[in-house]
Amino acid sequence: MRNYLCRPVGLQPANLIRREGRDHASASQGLELIAALSVSLSDSSAARDEGEVATRRRRRKARPPVVLIVEDEPTVRVLAESIIENDGFSTLSAANAQEALALIKESTPIAVLFTDINLPDGTRNALDGLGLARRAVELRPELRVVYTTGGDQTDGMTALFVEGADLLLKPYTPEQLTEALRNATSIRASDEKPPG
Image (cartoon, rainbow, N blue to C red; front, side, top):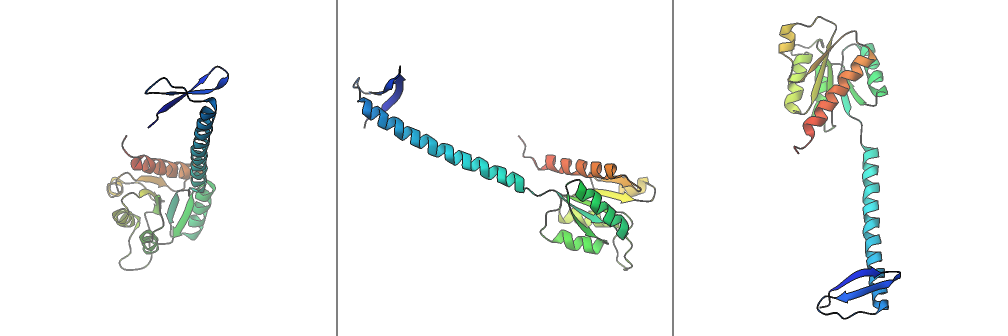
C-alpha cells in the first residue's frame, strides 16, 4: 500500500514522497492527487455550508415563546394580548381556569402562564389563578408563572405562589408586563441549558 504525503515545492506542482522510500512520483500524479483532494475538500465545504444554511433557516423559523393569558375581563385580556404580541411573543388566551387547563393539556408549547389571581367563573369547583398555576405546573413543570391582580399583595397570597413565580400588580404598564415576561422566559431558557 502506498502512503503519500503531499507538499508544495516553490511554484512547481506538488511533489509526492512515498514514506517507505525516497521515490518521487511524477508531477502529473501530484496534480491528480491535488485535484482529488480539492474536490473532496470542496464537497465537505459545500456540505458544511448547506448545514449552516439549514441551521440559519431553523433559527429564523424558531417560534417565539408562547404566553398563555388567563383573564376573566375581556377588555383587559385583549389589551394584554396586544401588548404581549407587540413585544414578539405568541399568545393563547382563556377566560377562566378550565379553558386554560384545556389549552395546557394540548401539546402546544407554552413558556409562561400569565394569570389573574381572581378568576370567578360561576362554577362550584372553580379554580382561582393560584390553584390554576399549581395544577399547570404539575402538568408542565417547566412552565413559568406570572400572576396579576388588582387587589393588594399579602403574605398569605404570596405563600401560595408556585416556586419562581412573579407578581405584577394592576394597573400595570406595557413596559412592566413585557419586562416580567422577558424575565420569566430568560429564567426558563437558563433552566433548560445543559450543564456545562
